[in-house]
Image (cartoon, rainbow, N blue to C red; front, side, top):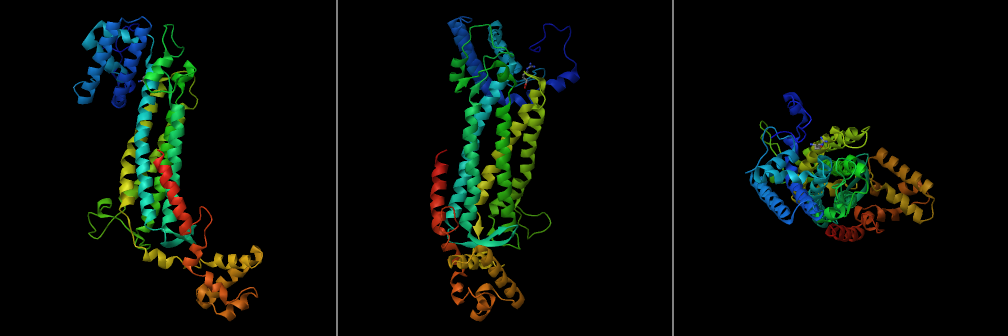
Length: 459
Ligand code: ARG
């Protein structure tokens, strides 16, 4: 079948141009959405009096059959089909002859492709949402099992203050909950229908963009036909959300990689979510976590490539916009692989709780407790910090831990100190004392866990 634009040309396109120009190699997955949009368009042409009722019914029915053939693989693109729109028009004309060609009235591939991509992205975002909810649930379930299990909380990857494993896991869940919010918020802006904008100026035919928008599940028709065919904010914004999810997965992955190392030994990965080495028989590698870290790079790259494509493009449609699809597809495809694997890895992690518990108080991670104890006695924090620091220095000099300092040694450091400070120098005490909302204390984490579960159930 010839191109959709052959009329004013004396010959066919050069092979090299065709190879460059064709998008069928990557846009065929939009076929079901293009068909749905065509059915809505047929109905609008009918209401405009441009198709008879019978013609409309025939077209809608033939499109449904074509859709089923696309799904079964009985209808597929062939060489010469420039893009998804060209291939489907060929399919329709093969079935209906001239009637198949009537559907092009009042629309352009420019408003079609913008509509198809929005429909596709909104659908895919639902799958992404479900995958994220599953991950938050897996993190919550693990957190629930470790509400009382201590670990060294770190800043700069150095022991800072003790926290619980449950709290650290829910910290990751919080990021994914924000991603879920982002997706929900994004959909409001994605739910605008470009169909009816034509090439760029709207249509002289009495179309009904609001009816088409409603039929396709959009909230509203586009308010500006030039913007409707030129705008790809929705694609860039989704690529951003995908990149942000990737960065969250990467940071979680990095922690799992550290925790599963010999040096940490905090977790054991399930065999089903780890891989071996072709030469070293003992190896058990955290490939899922590493791919989470690795794929974040390409997800950020997809966002960058889309934004750079859009930058400087004059309004309205330019062929550059054909480059919008692959980054979006790649982001969605990779997250569809990565999220279930990460969820499985998280759900099957086994924490070797005694290792993080044993190291929680080391590295003088309870020094802040001394300072807070002094503050409760009325000592200004500035001085309390100094005193606690001197305790650490003394311990380092004498190779002692903070709780091993004698009454004399404590009193020698500061007149404000005495042996009763040792009561706060336990991990359990430090954790239990953190009761304010959002803290790492088990009671606060229980409240947080309930909130996380409620939030996840919203989506
Ligand atoms: N394949 C094109 C794309 O993906 C469809 C729109 C083509 N429009 C045009 N005026 N050439 O963007």
